[in-house]
Length: 220
Image (cartoon, rainbow, N blue to C red):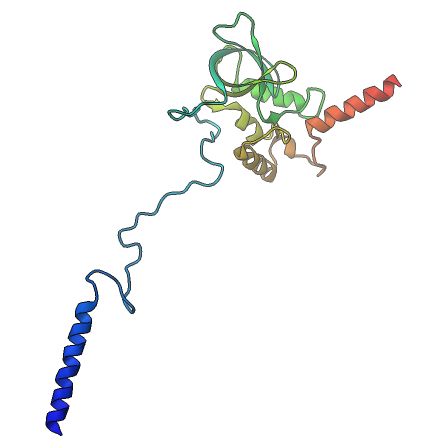
């Protein structure tokens, strides 16, 4: 009996050794624990919509090599600021000044509430004679150049929205950062969002629509 037990023990030990040798070296098997992030470098992901965006106060970022930009970048001089979203600039290669319409934003009209303040704020960012970088995205229906404007390193389009001096032009805006800046201005009640009456300010496109309706009624 003792001899049979001894033989069985020897057989069992031999089987265990054979099974252990069959497991490949370095491969985890059932019951083992792989160290967390062992040898793995996590990729840094940017928040959707942030790549390529320019915050107020930043310089325009250069296009990557091989990319075809959808704008022409010009170094110009500010000659006049008409309102909170339009100006004239003198650019090399052009005899006449170029009319610039600030792209993706819409400022109050001059005869609208906050209109004059909006113009004065843009003039403070882009004073007469200032050197400005204009990213020209082409002409609009009124033959103005749609531009992203940088004066003294400040992204004027973004700064106007951030300060509550202009709206994001909903019908034409594609830059998600501008919407974020507008939400901040609304939350902090800056500029045109600081209404004591609690009424929502009238957007410029609605103001212009009402003016056209009134003019049409007067002609009838």
